[in-house]
Length: 549
Image (cartoon, rainbow, N blue to C red; front, top):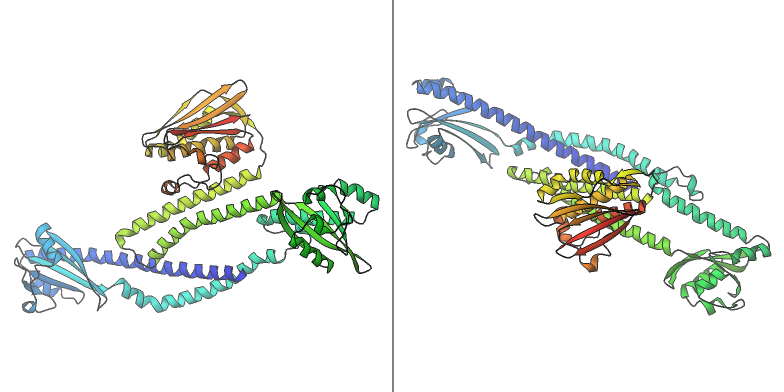
């Protein structure tokens, strides 16, 4: 991990430096090129003025190796050139700047020489006599400039990489150190990253449970019998032959047996090969843990040997129902995989566009499109991250004080916030009902209304409508969001509140949806003990009703 962090820091620093060098050189090059164009235009104007007065000698007196003057007559023949013999030069009527000068009065063009790695700029002006006066200037191309600067850039990059290596090494060590110094024997006392707190708390809880359960074995027989009979965890005691000495009711339930089984071999009530292997391992003096799934539940078994005077006299088996823990773990893994996939897509797009721009593989006229793509994908990434953070906050179920909230004001606030989005989709928004108060948490209520309305707009039809309806019957207050959109197939309505679940993935990708909106609605509703009802007909629209208790 330390090496990976180190390499990432060094690589990123190097790429940023190289990119900055290329971009800076490009800006400097463009600046001086524009300055040269302005100078050429001014000089050409002065020269044209003198030639118009009949003072062609001015061109000879203005002799310079930097600028070149050429005078072309009406048929394209060169009648004067400040650096070459005009009699030896071909007809110039096909030159772009000459054609523009005759058609527009002024022409400008550039020509690039791959062999000389030079770029020549031409400016031409039409004289009153019908002749065209042209000025030209040659200078090295940006590629030649970059090649000239390459040794200096390499030196700077080398020094920067060395400095970045030193800093990256220190930072990577500092980042990893809290993980290396973790005290797993006392997880709760670790002062480390906040993100590890759930794992450390769980480890601490498991350690405490095991310590408590093992300490119970040291009590008197009567106390032990009373305790194990009331345990929710299954407990089985075996002798050194694998015969059951003691089994509590919870264990009988787990193994699905009735009546007395003491004195029988463990294989009589459980023929799982993994259990048999674990018993043999425990008899060899090694502590073993396995997981097994049966009766639609997942159990964790802990096998430990019992010693007396350094001799193994039996085995203790403790059984935990970890169904909820396993399902929660699977959900977290699926959520992590979905988050990784969703974050990967915009990041790949951003990196791809940035790489093309960094390597100067994009035409000048196309660069704006790439910058817009980076901006769009960055905004999509930010929305996704904000939604994930909001979901995490809702998962924590932090209790906030409930206050009196006017649903009509919240609905109006949401409409004001989504006006631009609705106008872009030509969707009309309205509210039915009047001021109605509920006692709840405003942030949760706002997130429910906002996400329901946003979904109703995004998945609506052109020139559709979204209606927020507020009703109060007896002591029950409800808020409904009704749209004329694409609707939800009945077969998928039970899954729409799952994280990252999308009914139409292609449409969601086109609209920039994250698949988290309805999941946020569900979590926010759970936090305030509200219920959600969905009524939808495919191709006709949907109605989401939230009832506040």
